[in-house]
Image 1: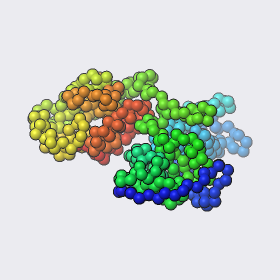
Image 2: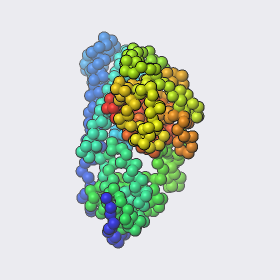
Image 3: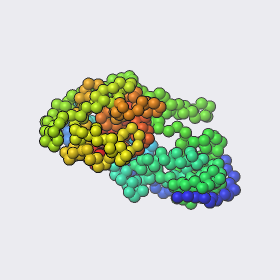
Image 4: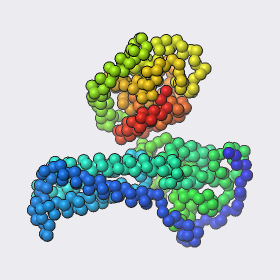
Length: 504
């Protein structure tokens, strides 16, 4: 799409932050997606806590211990029901609210919402324990544990389901999404456009670009959305039906203009978002530290050591050891299927580059005929990917049973041996062949962590991604690693494997 003509109008005088224009009051949005969504979350959380109390009272004989005495007009079963089905659920909702579990900044995307739910649940347990100690109530420890764990699991599961419903609505109907006008220079606006459209689940839909450097900067350039210049931003927002203004890059560096724009938006219901020239850095590493009215973005270094890293290593070894024991019968069946499909070794061993550039031999089930490496030279011109990897959707070197293993990713299961040996991790950048480059430049940064059986690359498209996009995702993981992020990727891996997305 190409936009070669632009409207240029004289800008109206800026607002001084005192009056709120009539248009703003009249056109204020009556409802936002997060209001009904938050109401649904409150209802689900309430049902979850009630369900947890019901589970404890139904399956634990001593659940009423400590609540058998009378308290005013309530006694025995009535007293238990009062605390189990009224006080505790309402208290849980209040603590969830005070911990920011309903804050729209954290709803629908990322792990912060779930972190706050866990934090609130810990607070509930601490509060119940403190009240029991203060009132000398002999509560059943099993009941407290059952209720707290059950409620936490139910809340997390219900919120995960609600989030998936929201994502589906955003992808297929556009409901629950924000329509954005990007304000800045064309390169900056297009960079933000690319970033926000990578994830439809985020619910950010750019619908227009407003140039700050004049229409000449974009003449003759193809753009994905209409481009405007010299327009009143608020009028443009109303015209294109947007509800969010994203100030991009250098446009955010003029504090006077940004402040006046924020004043103009007061009472309009239009959100103001600032997108600085700082990409692929996750929120936990970025902190705002205001100094004399100047908000400074402080970017912390990636955390690639410390207690969290030790826990990750321990989790890898334990999970790999237990996994090998549990799936050993499956591994034997797969080995038998390979031998029946094509004579030759069961495993394929290839040298890969690991942590700090050290090489190791990766374990995989063989999915190709024994002469696959010799036949590769004749297929190089049919490579369907760029970068260091060779991929074909219908590779003639793969035998039938091997194709099924690849589609289900079961050919990767022997890599648990590499994880147990400390050569790989459950989550991390995929290990690349040692003979495909010297890992100079940005690619070498992948070697700061151990390669993984799964990673951000795999859950974001696998072989369907370009090499540059795969590298970008791997570097994002290296720079923003956390235990919570690892668990999130492991969870997403299950869905990707079941859908067989990008597996060939």
